[in-house]
Image 1 (tube, rainbow, N blue to C red):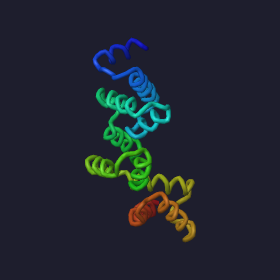
Image 2 (cartoon, rainbow, N blue to C red):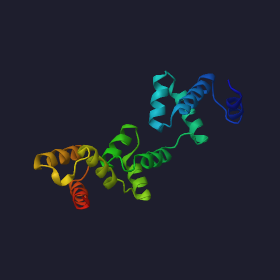
Image 3 (cartoon, rainbow, N blue to C red):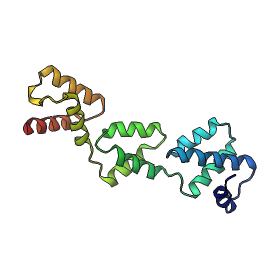
Image 4 (cartoon, helix red, strand yellow):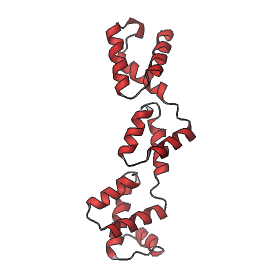
Length: 168
């Protein structure tokens, strides 16, 4: 075991060697990327650790603050702002095992306002340099459908489209 692991483990007591190995594996997994509580538990379970070892490993990483779902949601929102719809963010985070209530709470606290920026970016990407007023009814319909499938509200899409038309 590495010196830094020995120092950290000195103040934390594990019930057996398997629990210690599970905690070490959890730390190694967290070195690569930030994970949700559910993702980490799933990974440790797939590695074949017992329920007791998994529980102690999770307590260990939470005790030292290495895993925190709230922080994960805050970071996710910060990096996805202006890229994804609220609905898409809810879906992606629920796939990672985070409750809708926590996501909703963090969104309200951070006053998530990234949807219009994201819509504008996606529309401009779809236009490929063309002007929005030059689009046919069918082309606009395709863009609206695309954005609807991405989870954006049609009222917001219309608002952004109007803003882009007025800028041209």
